[in-house]
Image (tube, rainbow, N blue to C red):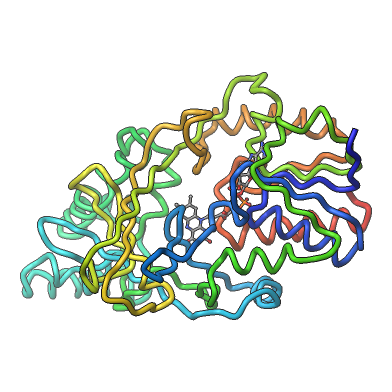
Length: 375
Ligand SMILES: Cc1cc2nc3c(=O)[nH]c(=O)nc-3n(C[C@H](O)[C@H](O)[C@H](O)COP(=O)(O)OP(=O)(O)OC[C@H]3O[C@@H](n4cnc5c(N)ncnc54)[C@H](O)[C@@H]3O)c2cc1C
């Protein structure tokens, strides 16, 4: 039986943070395994044959207001500042997302747009972010119709494609998050720090894992080794239901398929990400050279197709959170709490959509609890 002090399952961002902290702060040995052939989990990127850095699992922009997290990651990478701009392809033209005062003038005649702008500024004020649901229930008919327009043209079909069911059946919390921005700022995110590791995410994660006390073993699943390994602590960032052989039933996830293609043109689209709410089976197209502002006569794009999750066939990307699945997750979480020295965390271990910032924050928090003996 192979013995290790700390076993980390998953070499994604969550696993890398814990391994790094344990090795550098507790000065203990860590074995990190991942069933994939590479580190970095879903933030993995690689150099395409044409020289462009490609994010294999979709566009990732690191963003945070938390200086501590920014400083922590900055010890492993320099940054390329990047402010994401997104377009949507609607009725045969590109329009600005999130829907804002500029978009108004792209989709309506100038006099109509000016009239709506005046009302939006008077009712909500410059800088407000108004959830589309709230706009749809406004007493003013023009604003109600605007809310309806945004819902139908930008949200409803996109949601149907993304989640595989009508927008009305999706958790209302998702809809509540879709705002109209009463603003002329076309930036997609608002956080103080928005950037991409200057040499890519994989390089950053490799730096986190480069330590004499850390061993990384790829192409290795927990299931393969679990009967032949003993550990004092196990940090598990894989799906929590799979760990327990789905004994209470499988937790649902949404999966994605990425088709990566080189195009023989300098630029394929006007922004790094273009959403296709109403046309085609893919939801969005990402053009990778924008992220690090890489120059090349050709370009690389990836088409993102949402699909049903099939264990063993594709990857679980998004937990499908709703009151029923959260209750099912709680059953697994209770079971997990009975296992001393075993910690479930990360996007799949915690069955929760985590941005990178949240994944790093949760892993640092878990480490602090372990260090102080609270866990
Ligand atoms: C399409 C998409 C776009 C995103 N865009 C952004 C963005 O712009 N900004 C942002 O902040 N966040 C974004 N995110 C979220 C970001 O990807 C996550 O926050 C981050 O990847 C979480 O890291 P993790 O380590 O928890 O999970 P993962 O990256 O999923 O890592 C888990 C690892 O565990 C491995 N594993 C699982 N089970 C086992 C097992 N049984 N045995 C061995 N290994 C196992 C997996 O192979 C995987 O490598 C996006 C997510 C997606 C899906």
